[in-house]
Image (cartoon, rainbow, N blue to C red; front, side, top):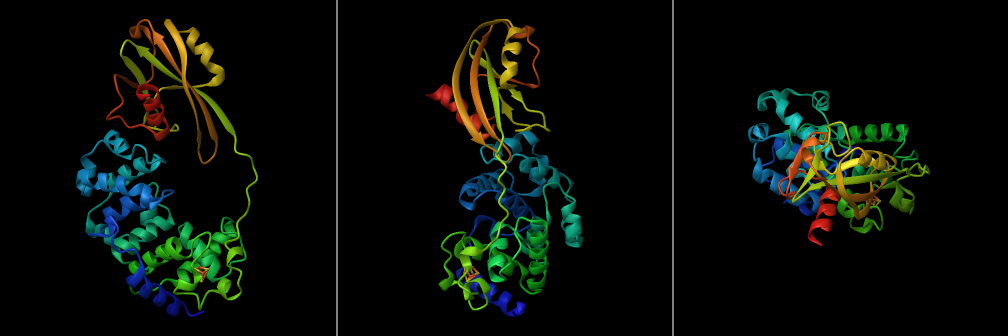
Length: 341
Ligand code: SF4
């Protein structure tokens, strides 16, 4: 397969049929690429698009984001999930040097920033700075695995290494931005996980899986059969008159830097409640939430206390509503369910 022929086909197709009007493609810069790429990790375009717009409306430049507090950034990210990305973005922007120095960066320099792996660095370099750096997001892995009939699982170390080799071999030096955008568009619009539109694909004359009518056999993946663990937590909402307490979660914890009722392991709740002077407790709500590595089953209790002065509490706030606070989506949904239903 001629790699030049392949890349040229993708470039030509992108120009005519690809996505060229996404908000972050207007006035493309390192900053807009950084924000959009971090928001797109693990998240669909349609979900992140309003968050992106709101974020850029608030902080249109690197300098404006440098001046923002982490709390403000977390609040703008509230509901989008995978909150470490917001912390990484803020940290990266805080340490980002001027435009000229960015131009001198190689891919390893970009990968030293938190949350920026090889593919994100490749996207920043190619899309914003027109460097011939490959990318390998989930869509691109699928496209390459079908085009080349990759016989190794794409989620294995060897499979990934081979995919990076393919990505590097196919990378053109001219128009790397359009080529990488084309690969992403192809994966998202044509070479979809199910029912790929092979007849409309610009690469179907080169695709080995299409040639052999084995498209549905690729990509090969290693099945992970380990059952996902379940964690049972109690969320305790301490209430005094009209105010309630929300803890600001420690940075290293789940939902770090976000506000949340007190979180206790189910087995600790009674012990905890026996240490405080309370009027009453009642169960308000329960919910389940699936994280990448575990499933959460949560019960939410209100605990009316007698005097907050004598309580020993972690960092947090007594509030009368949660507006303007950075909250994880399940917590926001939970509070809405309790107070607005
Ligand atoms: S021909 Fe089909 S399987 Fe092959 S790259 Fe195109 S859409 Fe994907």
